[in-house]
Image 1 (cartoon, one colour):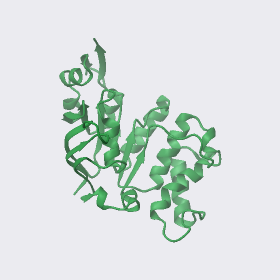
Image 2: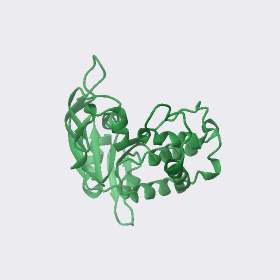
Image 3: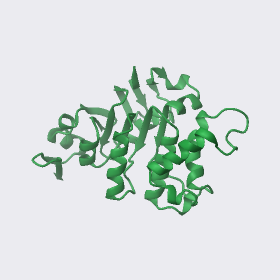
Image 4: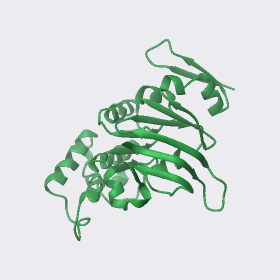
Length: 257
């Protein structure tokens, strides 16, 4: 069974032309995939289809073999967690309370969302905070944190959710180099299916097993990084001349008009 599968998917805002068209691909369980492309190519729109924020105009999105729109929200959230690019800053909650929200899909009964997590839930929350190096700021208000710290809190919330699939929209935004590398290493070591949009092509090449490149709402390339990230494909995707230096331990990408 594939973790995520899109079949003949199209989407666009109501009353407007499609932004995404003829999108079909499957992501096996445990695979790490990066989605790349120019601004406006449809990357974030594609993620919104996967994490059940918007329904396709045509086609089917499946999660663990089931149409996501035949799932309830809680069922989908037990399988998939999403970390978005922009986070609200006006939450009157602490970091620990934000991370605790990740346990809600697993809790049952009236008032579960209002009660203080205990037992196994509390242990999972503390482990997620520790894993993202957030223990020292667990009781700080979320709104007082820096952009990078807030991003790490939201990743910790996703980890507390214990999903089988994690979807991230530009997860390295706001993070310094150390935390970028730590986050990507962590994601690679989770054993989960990971789908992330990335602007940094070097990070995409190092982090992912597979790269999908979008151009104007359609799939331009899909394959291992050394195949998908070719000079010809990148030139087509970004409308520039591209050069790749593969002589070092990591590929280096340069572009010019």
